[in-house]
Image: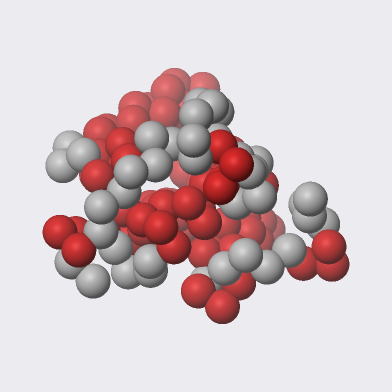
Length: 150
């Protein structure tokens, strides 16, 4: 699916199609890493960044439902998470790829900087899976064990 094939009229998600988004996202993550690096070493900074990113994106992308703006689409998306609203549910779009790639890159950076620290590896793997598993196409619209169901 090409970007031109998807017309996202949802004001809650249409901003994801800005050409500068990947760069802004990378700069923002880098800025947070530098902020954490002021207080911690590289390994712990990478872990803190990954953990913070994972839990924040899980809550805002995979847990909260609806749209903050009212309007005509509010009723249509009231039962949908942010991830489910992106690109009208189409997978493989550039916006979705960015949101999948970011936690993977953060994971590799955290694993590399932590070296042989097994505890950090387990914690970083768990946090990464927390945000990657809900992005799987087979789990679209699924609420595990009825949690977060309307």
